[in-house]
Image 1: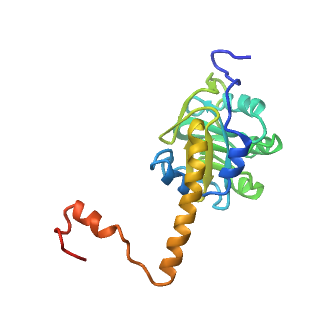
Image 2 (image 1 turned 135 degrees about the vertical axis):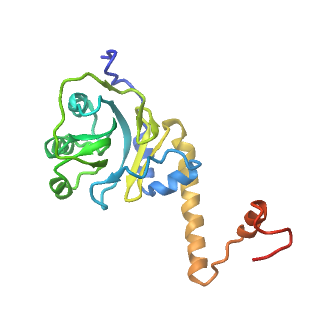
Length: 227
């Protein structure tokens, strides 16, 4: 069933790709995706140990109102990540312990909300991955229609339903579903290259082969001049 406000019929990033993506940090994907897809740094995990990966189940709400989030919890599939466009509003928490416990029981993969949450002590103990831009003890209203399964803006990044979402201690990255298959081998290569470079650094080779060329291009060093 599709109405003007609820779209539940969308393609998701494949389970295989989600499992492969779970090997990598959000920062790796931000790099191989051309420094695109990383949400604003205000988006952070309720506890640093929290990590999530899965397809986006998008929710668009009016500031301070969580009616559509309740509907989304009922409609989302196991493994989905709720990605909530709360318009960056911090005047009321959009979710708390009751709703997050429901998400865990429904076997969702996590929550990313461009808004506030509350009951953070309980959320830390629960361990279910929750990323938000802050906290507020105020409760929300439950009166205003929004949208489910539409393109949303979350902490400065456009997220489409079914896109891949990765979150860890560094923040949250969203990758367009159509590009994930291409980005996964690039992520594997990036990890291998960084491991090689880390080994060189630990053996005392801290020089960056590209640095002097970049400094000349920036006009810091003259041609032929060395650091």
